[in-house]
Length: 224
Image 1 (tube, rainbow, N blue to C red):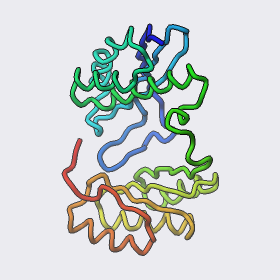
Image 2 (image 1 turned 135 degrees about the vertical axis):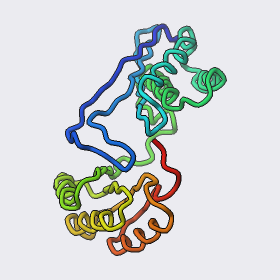
Image 3 (image 1 turned 120 degrees about the horizontal axis):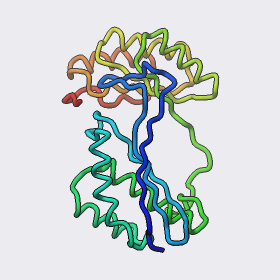
Image 4 (image 1 turned 90 degrees about the vertical axis):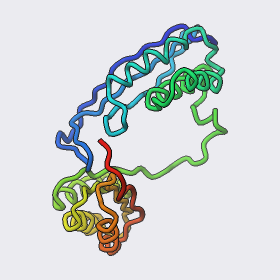
């Protein structure tokens, strides 16, 4: 089935928490671009290209990449996903956020044209149920614990705790969340590269008392 039309629409979604932030940025909205592919039989496939300076994917830059990458899609056989994606890599280096939106739209179009869920294109579902993880943005320890409690009351048991590089405050954040959600919750800590190596080691040794499951991106070169 040939692709006969491509649309790129802006998506700006306001966050309930206007003060949402992590170590490298803060944003009151989630921005991106929705890619819509229309097949010759009228079937629509949708993809989403997220944007954020932290990803090195500024909003307008991703739009520019999508404009260029989407033009050659018209007239292509939508079933030839691997070939199309290879051609996009030859057309433009990097720009993975833009390419991911097209990738998802191609797979969505294929699945919808067949009348099956996307997972069937990859061999079917491996599981029927799985736990979801929610992020706790940086706030005071008490406020983060309060947010964790609200999520726990809705059934959430996996949390990613954002921290920002101050050992004392971050240890207190993790401890407060652990006390609030109890011993059976699963805690991940994400510092977004905000720690020097020695401080990272010191913080993690102290956070170990709160039984964290995973720590990620604690030290390294900061990016903006």
